[in-house]
Structures are given as C-alpha cells and as structure tokens.
Amino acid sequence: MGSARYVAQLSDSERSRIALNINLDSVAGGARLAALSSGFAALEPFLLAVADANRHDLRCVRPLMTNSDHANFAAHGIPALRLIAGFGSADSHLRLLLTAADTRDKVRPEELETALHVATVLASEALMADEATLEGLANNVA
Image 1: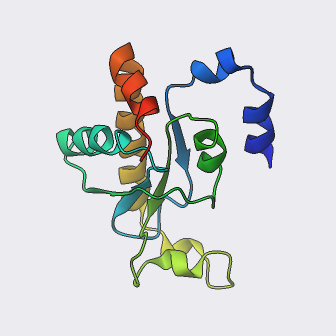
Image 2: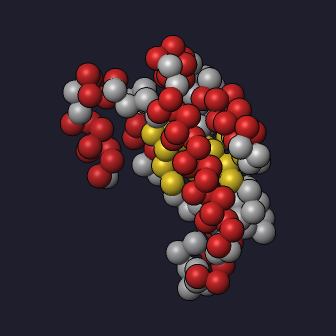
C-alpha cells in the first residue's frame, strides 16, 4: 500500500523523472535470478544485455504480476521490475517463504552477493543510459 500511495501522489513531472524501478523482493533462496519485467518488452533486452555483460544468468518474465511494489510503478507507465530468486523453480527455497520452515539456513551467502551485484549493475547502467534508451524502455509496453 505504501508504494501505491507514494506513486499516486507524485505529479506527472515527478513520475516522468523515474527512469526505472528495481524492486528487490526475495532475492535469495534460489540458484537463478529472474526479473519480472511488468510487460515492458523493451526492458528485457536491456536487462539481459547488462546481465550478460556482467556474466550473470538472468531470466526475464514479461507478464505484469501484481504481487509486489514494482506493479504500482508499472501501473503508472514507469518501467519496473521485481528481481526474485528461484522463480518457477520447484527446488527453490522460496516455496517456504512465510512458513515455519522459512529460516536463515535456506539462504546461501553467494545468492545474496549475486543479487547485490545484479541489482548494482542494473541500477548503474540505468543511471548512465542516455535519454533515448530510457524513453524507449518506458514507451514499449507489450
């Protein structure tokens, strides 16, 4: 509710200055990271190119999923993604999320390190991208 209220209270001008929303939600507990790209088709090549250039295996999942804060940004036309570990993987520890079995031993430190690096390079590349690239991300919704 907080992100929905936050984005809704922004002026159009303020929203237009947000180039990319990166939501870090459940970034450990699975071997592979996925980016839920909120229906922004042009966002996927950007994400995959950045991940590949930094030797990370990233899966993109396009349909908008309204299960986290990224959806509130996407609803306002802001390119948004949710970075999540183990998406769609039967052996992911995220199947235990919010259960009694959801304990620290389910997270491997290298999963957190990978998520940190992926999030950092994605944010860095978005910050360094030219206006045309950023506008392309926002204008290409599938």
